[in-house]
Image (tube, rainbow, N blue to C red; front, side, top):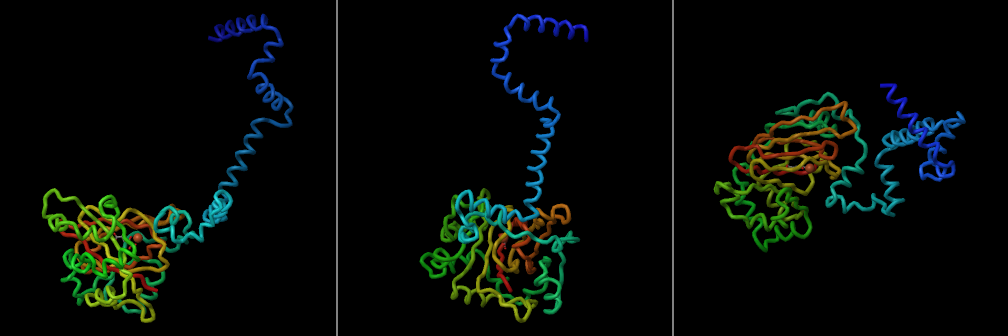
Length: 334
Ligand SMILES: O=C(O)CCC(=O)C(=O)O
Ligand SMILES: [Fe+2]
């Protein structure tokens, strides 16, 4: 083998002897290789050392970004690169979800350390709820807070279809000033009005080949809020001083669909009551806690209320009932 290589080398050397020196020096890659060889041979500036230092510096720079804060780094970069002060663009956040993911403040892993499943509690006192869950970002399910709610019997697709009938002030308010999330159905439901135009066979899954649907919206209209509150009461466990926001969030849809994995930017923690159907939740810790905390899933049953700070836990849902639509109502609290 080595004899063969030797012969090959000799033949190349012989061929090269016949080429004039000038012609070799004019070959396009000669200059580049000459430069590298010069650097190596001085011993003063080894090319491999240069590369190691360059990549080392890039590595240190990259690793320091999380230390100084990814959000701060990106804020600075957006300002310099596009002239956008991202913190003054809050109204874009609901439309451009990546802004929430990218610019949310770093979360302490203390909130999710050692949590591997959801706790279920009942007969909890306000003080105990306040100390353990209200402001600790620790998710919990309260199993006995909806016993006397009229909503359990009255809230169904037809109830909301009547409330949000065409030209009603309730519907106009949602369409003009509240938020609407059509999730996977965004190509067919542009507004909440489109949802309630759906025929009842589809809404109630009577049609065997029904297309599944899932939507959520906020009710930010005072008189609709007043009406909705006739059907449910403020959960008994909320601290006395806590203001339940006047904004209701309603999520409704058929089995198999739900909200994709996301994190919110709504300031306050919230409670969400499972009025009808069952909903499976997955909670995922923020990526900076990937090695400290674990993702986990659980199902919220009808009559249960989940309390969650959706600003610090990534969350996704899907309706897990066999043949019933899921309806939930909730609100933020401070
Ligand atoms: O209930 C759902 O499907 C989604 C709820 C949600 O994203 C929230 O409450 O922030
Ligand atoms: Fe959310």
